[in-house]
Image 1 (cartoon, rainbow, N blue to C red):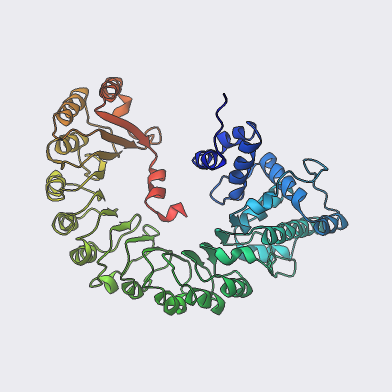
Image 2 (image 1 turned 180 degrees about the vertical axis):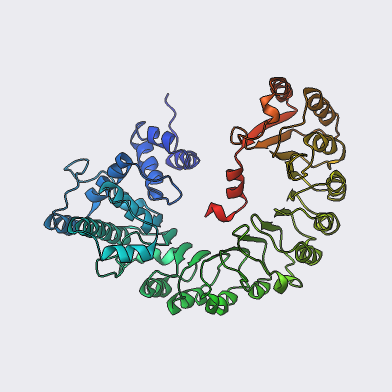
Length: 512
């Protein structure tokens, strides 16, 4: 007797494949039930802006399906303007693909259409306006076609999406030929339940006004500050009832008049991220976010000066995650901040090499679980390992002959002998030829295996095969054999990771 999974059970299983689009495409071919569920998942984020740049074939396939879903009046409008885009079939679509969408990026849809029309857009809004003044007729017609198609798709999605989860409207590749902005759905009932918004201050004010009429329960807002802040954006923030995640990306100094609106949400905000490309950004308003649990301060490394004075005596009793993935404030300022707020910290990440700051981690952060700080003295590493009894993971830069980072051999010895009982993950970035010999690795793994209690060690090496100027410990064949031996014995789990991926994971400016 054939056993069939219930729809609810099958749906739950296929949801786990959300990030595995190749497998989901295979699931389309199993039977109708699998196809129906897989299609819904695939089209939920069809214009996911985190995806790779559309290839011509991929873009054409998606666009042709969207065109097939357009209402007849939109199809007639395109035909009237001599825009002909083939559809998969002359019959009506099997599914209402547009209605499945939950995450919508207007900029990605514009990029999708531009790719099909081979109209390569620029990211510089000012240059686009100037360029429009000098475009030849053929290019102007191509842009007009792009805008018209995108407008009809956006209108369709606005009418078909019954519950939008995420809306991204950060920039436009194209303007109308009179330099006005296109793409404004006047009616968007599905946005009533919107929980995440990503936008910028150069989006016209009526966009924010429309949202402010229906969206009062946003949980996450990311704002790029390019120009002056529209009053309608301030009003939208004032109206939020439960904003939890706030991210500000500051390119322009004319943004501070939005601070009162941000403070109005301070009692609900638990995650705050600040990315800056200008100097001396005022930070005092952050002290009102007394329920903060996570905070990231990322400023363009080597360019932006960070004045942390305003937060030296601020208190964040619930703060658990603090990161400075790029430039960092003065070490003495961070030390004072940790003195007031380090007690409950579980993750601390800072690209700074300072003895006093490092020792303050040992003194003020007893509950730390994960740490990255730059060491140049092995005794400081030892002190932190002994003092932070709950530490589970640490990232260390190694290279004794390069900026006087720690010796990789000494790091392994110290970790084996002094890391706390809960410790299980060591990440190493090698800046110079590794000084680890096969006998050093053997000794380290034996010592780790003799620890009580026993824990599987996760050993991650950054930048393997990405650095041309250094020789990793992995380039030694004997070292690789020893690692494989102890991995097979279940003592260590070895992995590699690019340092760019680490930047992204830690919320660096370069991850935007």
